[in-house]
Image (cartoon, rainbow, N blue to C red; front, side):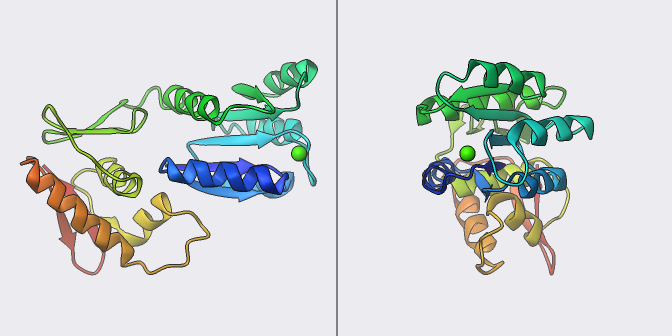
Length: 222
Ligand code: CA
């Protein structure tokens, strides 16, 4: 699952993106409001974490512009301490939630999970293929009643395949969904994770399998 972080305080941006990546999110980071707006417009983010005071374009305007475009991406705004006017204005400009600095990382990730859950209403909360269930909001994966222990990246790859069961998903698309834009590695890294997933699915006797689609990618079939 991909997030967009728009924060110009380099240290905060670094520590947040590191923490979010450790939770298994792919994170695009920019410190500029205008660049943030462009990235958000390009789409593909489960949520946006948006600072207010930004070079280029401030967070209020980024948010307002996204909503004017009809972009429904969930937005969590980071406000300065005691910034109650900021908070009110952020919500008025179309943000879904706010968190005032300094904030607890645990609270940030909990708020993000809640936003992403709400953001996916209308779509099934959990994805099911055969007896496999992938719950993106809870980041839980089960085969029957057995919970699979997956690494963050393994979960990401499986989620990506489970979103389109029975369809061939290109390797590049999986790479794009699970690894962030800064990743410069080999496309074949996907293969390594698929290998690990196959072993875990097999060990759990799952009634589904990841097939190789020659020259293209993979398909999760019941
Ligand atoms: Ca700032």
